[in-house]
Length: 391
Image 1 (spheres, rainbow, N blue to C red):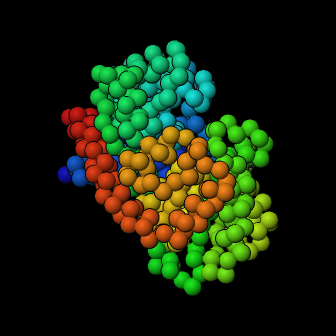
Image 2 (image 1 turned 60 degrees about the vertical axis):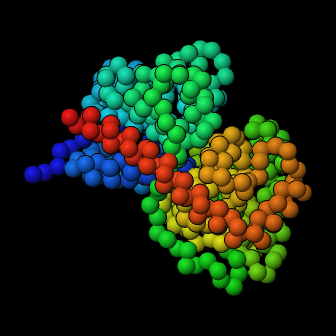
Image 3 (image 1 turned 30 degrees about the vertical axis):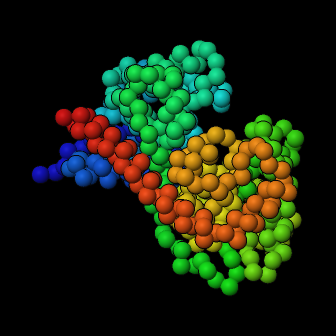
């Protein structure tokens, strides 16, 4: 007898975002949900529900249907509401970042209204592991509280998010899990490590670099990020025993401010001894390449997660509490913090971490055991949700 189908709506995912962090969440969440459903004798039918993106497609139409959310389709009863109501359950990943109010009114309203549509349609709503908060002012706090306490399940990807959930909606059905991108499939290229020259990767965030060069620094970093990256790359590239790989992880042809690729081009021109790695067309290829590195310094959260989950020693350059929350959960201390450090101290710290990369690798092994346990919490929640939806 054929397996029973279950229709799973993947809210705020993307099949072709140029930000490979969003892509990693999509591909990994599909892989987790597919495995859980298959183990239960269910055949998943995915529908990705999200904004229009212009990157290369890495989730094909044969793997998932696609519904594009716009202002028109969001407000049209025959648009997003109809698609959401047609699903057996909704897995909401929060557009690759978080459910918070710090990214502006429009983004908050899109994320909030679609949650409320799922609740109105009585479609079981699971907030897949993500950052919850901050919610800094009214009426956002009250609106978020309504959505969170009525959701079937809310998975926080760090302790600070779980604490924020408890503060906003004490009655919410919440649990601590971890970012699903740790489960992103990839091809293991770790055999390429340990050569005559160290393969040192640097993921320079276009967003952080441009913020620093403009003087805006809206994330409040205590280091001049552009100066730090230039000086670290310059020192490393001058070493005979190091090969520096410039690795983009978020590309945006239409938004140069947030494009790692343009900054990688700029730095490759300034430091011609470096290897300018080509823009990746899908998140698994990026993680596979990262797995070949001896060491990585990264400004993009999901480049860091790709390294960590493939065993590559990594030093994140943090720009928000997401970093300390996530890696603190895994007892991983190696990080450039957002404040309390200057460029000279940060340079010395990065070079010390490079020398101590075996210690970083050992901490990653221990951290991945915690990741497995925390992802188990999410898988159990999916089993419960799928069982109820398929009944």
